[in-house]
Image (cartoon, rainbow, N blue to C red):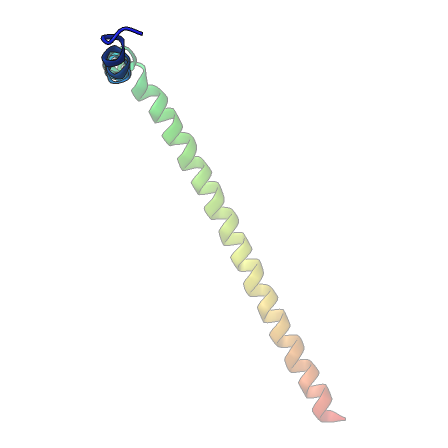
Length: 89
């Protein structure tokens, strides 16, 4: 193999990587300008959907907490009743 081929092979990788990075950066610059007008409506719809989901989850959490508190009160009342029965024997 000729002597000039070795440096060409060694420089081929960094030059190829630089070209790939340059092409990727060029593609990233043109994308936001094209989608800038359609983006706010889509984002606002997504925000509204997420807010509705959070409200639903908070309502479910409140229900579960109230059920848990009722269960605890029933358990305490039952255990108190059971202790009174045991003492009465």
